[in-house]
Image 1 (cartoon, rainbow, N blue to C red):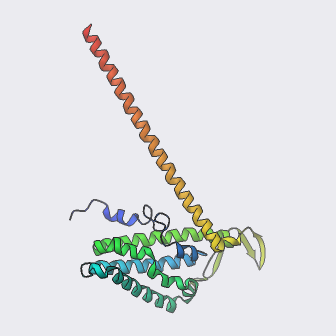
Image 2: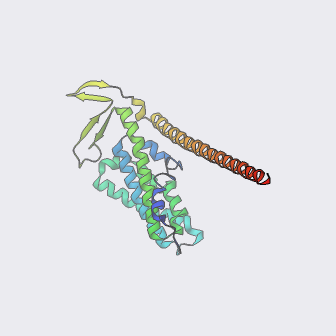
Length: 254
């Protein structure tokens, strides 16, 4: 089967930009709102989600010709649940702080509509390599979206970015932005605690979607304006050509 040039690149990039699961398709919003209090938690959730998505897509693609239409959805759920259970057990064993921070949201990856949706819409109809690239793009796109939300929520809510609390294998350190503490004394604090709460998550999410919509609308308006200008130029060129032809005709008659 022929493949258009650059298909693999487009297949990967669509999950990052054009079909971003969170900011474009508005899927997986529940864990996005609950696990983005900090950049570390968001990164952990994104990585676990990506691992499950990649493994599920690969296995579904491998078994796509063996799974009948009647049991397709239950079979996909069993596959996803198996990988989620494996990821959950490994997280509990090797990253207990991440496990306790994410809590039930690790288990809820089983019913995440992004994972099931990619298995149903893409992996069940494409080969293993393309399904891997699709999962990788969607997983990274979702992780980046979580990190963007977490950055604003952590900075606005706590006033600083902290590393080493969840990923304890790295030294703990903080980067002061809106809050500075030295020797236990608060030098300045412009943080707003509300952004660490669910209400703050909704506000940040809504503002990000508003910015994305504004950019899209501006691009659409600019494109429409450019197309209009092109049409006017073509119409003017046609009018001038017709006028020149008319002048040549009248000159020839004389």
